[in-house]
Length: 597
Image (tube, rainbow, N blue to C red; front, side, top):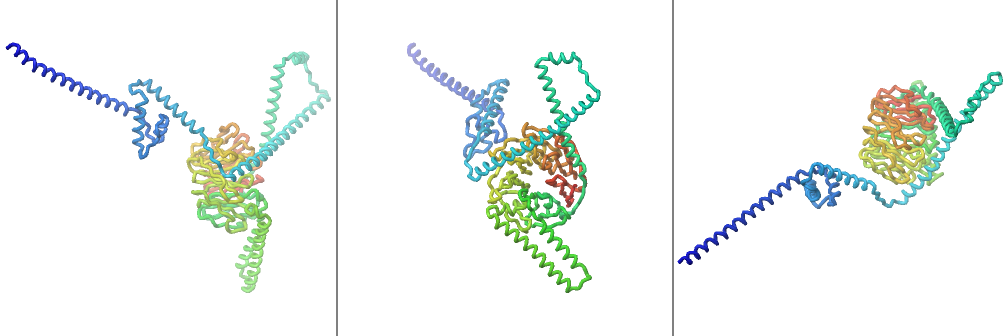
């Protein structure tokens, strides 16, 4: 009985133990699940605390630094940021301290810098056309010849100054000898002679250095005197003529190589040709569909004959006067008008015959022989003109936005242009084709100038950068970043190593190409500096114009103000210095251009 009871009691007890173990296992699994959820929540919170950049470019850079693909198919920037966060959570220690976090961020920044430097150092070379290769070889040969001539010219002038210094010193010595012969003698003590004999070699070297420094100082002062003598002539510049040009703003000016003619461009879409002898408007060229932004005479064609145009202009004036006179009879007036018409037609026929003769003489260089000036406009076009024709001899199209400046290369074989499409181009004047297009500015380009040797060019624009490009290799070799606002005025000095830039920040900066740095900063004007130009022969002075209605002339040896020319009642848009450095012409928004003599 007892055994039976014991046996019966054991069965329920075992069943109860099994129930207890199963319930404890379930409780432990729930706790593990809860702990896992808590761990995931804490992990996600830590991941969410990771600092992720908001800019999509920075996110892609960090993904690249981690070895992850910068973009997946159909991925939006928000998904890319979450992917970067997940990638960083695998790399970094989420339980790191503040110091460890700082060290990690510094290492990460250094890695990004290294990647950027490697990316900048990479050069992607693409085989260019044979025309571009020939162009660069021609540029290299031409610039080498020009550079040797320029350096030889500077050396000859320098030796000339040294000879004059030595001649002056010899004259002084002769005067001293004459004074000695007359009885004035210089006594030298014996003690000083002994000291001179007992001087060491080091002391003699120091004395020779001092002597050389003194001679150099004498040479520098003499050079400054020579420059100051040439600059004194500029002080006499005064307003000689003020002429009304067009009913709208006059935007640009260019003086002919022989200083006999002046081109004036305006916002009336017209270009006027004026004679500097009698200040007559010889001809008006109407072709552009928008504002004329720049005009330049072709400096290689120095035989620009304005005589036929002057004669035609005088004949037309006489004809108008004769028509207005009431003293003569109507029949006589008709006969006279017929005679004048025949005379004017004869002159026009002579002009056409001259053009035909030029074409027959040289068929290969037809455009260069007939080319007299170039113009550009806000209508995205560039025009090549002959002064005797009413329409352009060629039109260059390639820019996608308004063309702001044109400039002829010193060789006369190419034309440079810059535009609001962030690019500048080089055009072959023989084929009228674009042979080179360069991008590099982030915003609009306002100016493009060539180095006197022809090897370099410089561009400046809305981004405030002044970039120097080497045409022989097709790369930017210098970037000057000093202006706080857009740069409009730009010009190389004839000495070959100074570059001047004028900005909307009212300042002019002189850049030294040898030191690759700012040489001098001139607080020049009280408003935007619209144009800059060095004296064309020696670069002894720099002329600047501004929207403060003034023209200022600066000495190039110490960048001091020489003259301040006032006369315009509106913003001055452009200036040009004559090749003989005897006069300056300026254009303004007051619809006049002025002749400073």
